[in-house]
Amino acid sequence: MDTQMQQTIKDTLARAITSDLVEAVFSNPRLKNEIVKCKVRPVMIKNSLLFQIEEWKGKQVFHQNLAQKETITHLSQSLETRFRQAQISTLSEDTSILVSKKGTVTVKTKKRTGKAPTVSLTHNRQKRYLLEEGGPVPFLIDLGVMTPEGTIIRSRYDKYRQINRFLEFVEDILPQLDKNRELTILDFGCGKSYLTFALYYYLKLLKGYSIRIIGLDLKEDVIRRCNALARSYGYDTLHFLQGDIADYTGVSQVDMVVTLHACDTATDYALAKAVCWNAKVILSVPCCQHELNRQIKNDILEPALKYGIIKERMAALFTDALRAERLESCGYRTQLLEFIDMEHTPKNILIRAVYQGTSADNQESIAALESFLHADLTLKKLLNE
Image (cartoon, rainbow, N blue to C red; front, side, top):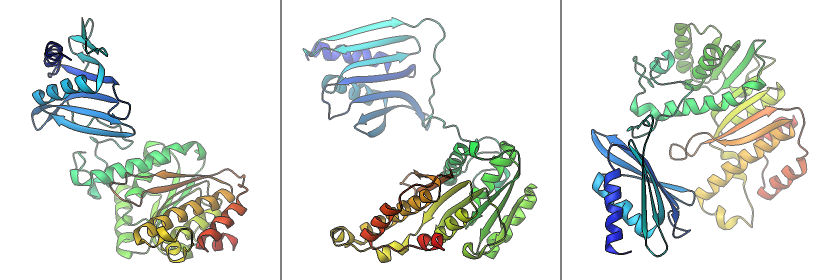
């Protein structure tokens, strides 16, 4: 590409890369294994106008925020070496840049008519959450996630996202719940009960379901505080009890069982209880899967199992896979889903099971996998009992 063509690109970009930019999209990559697409938009960060560059390479997405001159230089180089096409929209015009294989640059600009588009200068575009920021939610305030004015506390934003992610999983199974009668929900190992309160607030206050929720945990001080909060909010069908998952017999019928980060085999006791009650929905995020880690043994896998961290992660994944298969054999349609991003916690698999009544014919395959891993797990024993 000659100097005149390079200057044409720079001049065109200099006219477009301003605060009037709506969006620029660079495409038609020259090399398939390099950056295949690039999007650019203006953002305001700490009262400075920057430009957010979003680039795709395979399944990965890379972001960087650059000043105006740096952005123009970066995009000019991209059109010279990476892309053959750019579509740029500003408040006043639409521009296309085409680069031929011989390096010829063609620029076409069309004045915009009609209403100008809206430009968002927020760094992170707002995601719509089921529990929206801006309106005070009492339990989120008392649990230290939200200010009295309804603003999410920055250091607790991950917890806010986690709560909303959990409610998204609940929203998916609402058609499975009978809205014409009172539903019983058990939360085993509820802890500080962020998600228990969120579940009550979402199902009863936002969605209008008639529900009774029981939270169970071993810590007396936690149970006392949660009961006090529930009373202060007027949540009259939300109760917390001190007790062990394995020994709980307080109800005879349950519609939904929730167990979040119940340690090791406590998850198995909760799952077995749910199956015995024919619970319609099970939501479980397992934690600390030590049982298979102690048992797993296989000559073929030994080159991997000799590394402790690999053995730990393999044991956790196989444990949850076997749990899911056991639930399938009991008539549940079971999914293993990512609860929250791996960057926040490695304990991020959620088992979501919905009772269908038709059992999977998978006993032989389960037995074969258990034999391969040298596994004899608690859930199998509990279900057999």
